[in-house]
Length: 179
Image 1 (tube, one colour):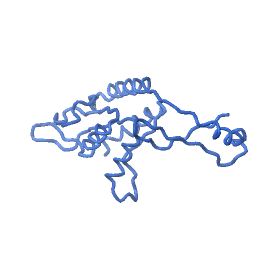
Image 2: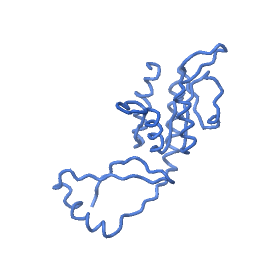
Image 3: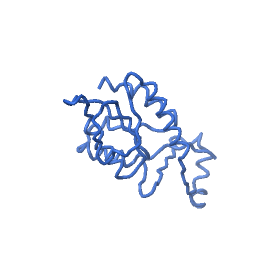
Image 4: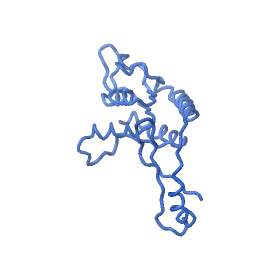
């Protein structure tokens, strides 16, 4: 909703500045089973930022969060991928099985502090990111070499890769072709 607009306006550009892609459960038009599509997106991700923000106020003064956020955290925990929960202050403390996940407290009156902690966390994630790569076989290199050297003259030539992390294959990512 409108209270969460700051996430799109401020957080998404920060994530992109680290060279990462923002993947959300939004815009799943035409999907027959939205839940399955969201789970597939989580499985294709390398990490999860979950924004648990206030929904409905409880009688004790605490707040609930959106049930989808809680379930998405459970899916990410089960895969498992690294999780960072940005948890708004005064949320119901019952977090269930994902309660041990690392989190940053978000207070609407101190959004700047939350963003600083988020940048620090993203910086640590990117420092620790190790990617093992297997170079293509020499036979394939020889077949592709003429195309690579003529990239400027080969319309439509594109290269993508999918990373295998454990037993999960990530989504196709564009890769710059260099001789």
